[in-house]
Length: 197
Image (cartoon, rainbow, N blue to C red; front, side, top):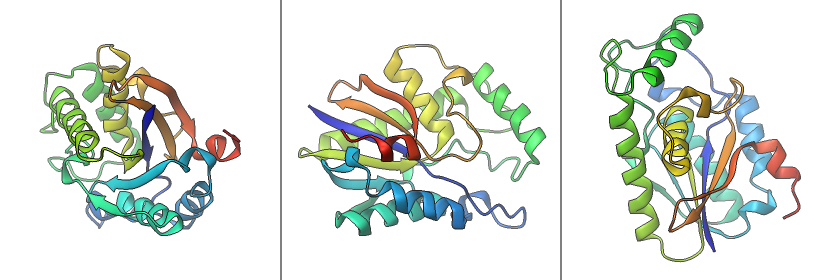
């Protein structure tokens, strides 16, 4: 059975004066991805994809270099488009994210609709799975669209209850290919690093 590992980027260097898509991983985030690159669950991975956002590029490059596997960019893996509001302070962001998931067919303050973001990320992952016909695939992307992918794979309506745990990112969903059924729901990089199989 082939697998798709959807990995969310870990901790980022937040700068309100820099566009969100240009935020890099911070030192903690880089260290978490570096440690995870040795995880046994990655042994079958032959290629890694990422969005074009810097934090995802950073995580994918760490994995690519550690494993000696190619890294390819798929722009459609980007986080839900929030450029209409730009940076929001944490409390305002959480309120906006709640509304994004609670009203998936509506645009919250100009954000991309959750239903559209879900269709985009699912189509991107399916295309990658059709393109890469050998071995497992790793994707380094984002928590919001990861939650939407998990809702699709689980066969449930869009809900924030399927969002990744915690606020530091760095979690993994493992899906079977080609069915996209769930093997593992959200697991932290650290938890999977400790698993022997």
